Length: 303
Image (cartoon, rainbow, N blue to C red):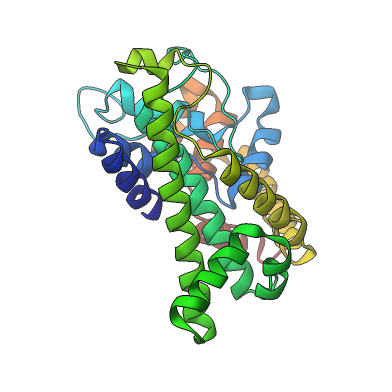
């Protein structure tokens, strides 16, 4: 929801199609498996001999095939532009492969806005989660991360001493505000300089027109490197990720061996797409909590 809100604000400032932007933002992660990118890597490995797994492609599969809302056709009644935005969802963490029917160099400006809004939200939530879990500290962030240091000083100057929760909240909101303003100003200038007059002109551009300034991009790369070193690779994060991967592997192999235990729709789809793909669809549609519950029901213990 926050991705959609940020995306819509940027789209409004750039005078783009707000409804298209919000739709792409709301749907961009429909194909994500349980346990985030580690879950995606696990399913991709399990499906190596069956076409692999990539969450952008799975998002398209959800809206084009798996959702059954209409009697006359499979999937949802979405425009090509929405589906293009899902196929070309790209951030520092997401690198989609080319897909037939969506071969242009760049997606629409609306899709580009959804991409960058996702990145802004990703970083802000990881900062919040890392601080709440005690895996990150404000002191160390202030020493090593420029964008945090500037935001923290601005909040202190404006509000003075604040309770811990309020201070962290306002610092992160300040970072989001700085990034949104930077994206709007930089993108507005880039769009004008490129002289694009249509969505097809945008798709011919060699690189995205919706982007950060050089300075903020460098600061975001600094922030990303810090999060990798101090949060994503932290042993307290890696161990739950290891267990999550094992859960998905065990569930996958269990259902391959016990196909009658999954729903009728999945069994029907397996007749056309094969059991591995149908079971992959089934697992990819689970929430983290439901995957854990299913593993406990079937195996009776945590990994």
